[in-house]
Length: 235
Length: 235
DNA sequence: CTATAAAGTTAGGTAGACCTAACAAAATAT
DNA sequence: ATATTTTGTTAGGTCTACCTAACTTTATAG
Ligand SMILES: [Mn+2]
Ligand SMILES: [Mn+2]
Ligand SMILES: [Mn+2]
Ligand SMILES: [Mn+2]
Figure 1 (cartoon, protein in one colour):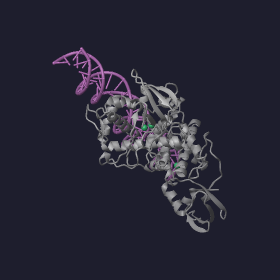
Figure 2 (cartoon, helix red, strand yellow):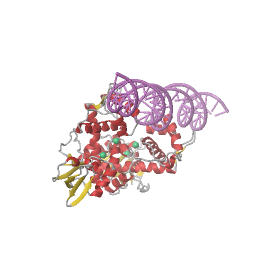
Figure 3 (tube, protein in one colour):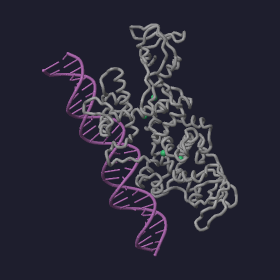
């Protein structure tokens, strides 16, 4: 079914394995975090290993393979980056992941803490047509259930200003745009706090000692730890 | 995520690989064909190899593994059958396959010759909740786009009488219930002939020489080869 | 009832994706 | 500037799922 000529250059036809897709997705995630946090360019073997829950030696082996396929820029002992090709393909996986999450949430009544796990599987389904139809079926959503931007069919992400709640000015109204932690624990806790995408928040006080925040949520007062406030993006 | 205790009996937790799922699905398909055609019970290594497009030695190896996992009854040089467990799990895969096909066709405007290929991938997504939600979303369909019965959540197939068009009585009206060839070539040809699920057909004449049929389709006359008529199920 | 053909099995090999243990390079601390 | 820690790499091994080539068992045909 999936014809691919491997007799010529192997990267002539971009047929990544499920595992390869996960590696470049992790790489995109980690490198973009580096950039937004204004750290160095590129990711290390160990960071990738932690993210993918495998051992560094396994990552090392894979990086060589990804390098052969022209998906990453890899040199011994140096930080790794995605090539243009690698980034394009990683964005496609992200697009599929987020569209599936949106589908599960909007059409199948999945809670926002349940979608990620299933989308991890669905993101690897190979069918251009399928994902375009899903996109259409959902009426071309721009953001997934966690507020993360969905790349369009060209790989372009919608741009939007957002700030971590932990870094926001006092006594000003903000709306929750996204969360940057997709673990069940965090999302369940948000539900308990009744904080969701679209919730209005106002920072009343920042505690200098531990960075925690006193928040006014439509009249209700609550305290958020810095860790939580770091994972809430507002604008 | 998918916790599974392999320290006890390995079949304590039924976590089949994608490939194992394909083997038991093929086995169910081939053995049920045997039964409807009143041939012997069980399938041979070579038949399975043809069906799965691998070599007999590969099948042989896998059969031993499936036997260990109590999914098949395998003895050297004998025909293979599914165990009760194997059949149950195979039916779950079939259920997923047919529900996905129905989803693609009914909700995403896929043609009936396009659904199979994508469903081959989707059938392996592991999530009880997902498939139950899809079932509900489709309002619990009983038949897929090719007229094949969809097992319910208990693995029970809806029962229905049907006959191959090639074996039907002359001058009697029938309705197309299903097709038993899911290749694009066959399904495209059916579209050309404007024969779909629900189409009314009347056999006017059987040509003894080659088994072909003269058909009256709502006033239009057409001739079908035996091969085609074999793959149209009516009732 | 043998001879040949078909079906099934075994042996030995490959590639992907993982592992542990040992080792080398780079970064950091004293 | 050297010692230590951290990070990254290599070597060698496992498991799944495939392969080819050689072999054995069963079926079929004369
Ligand atoms: Mn996610
Ligand atoms: Mn994934
Ligand atoms: Mn199908
Ligand atoms: Mn399949």
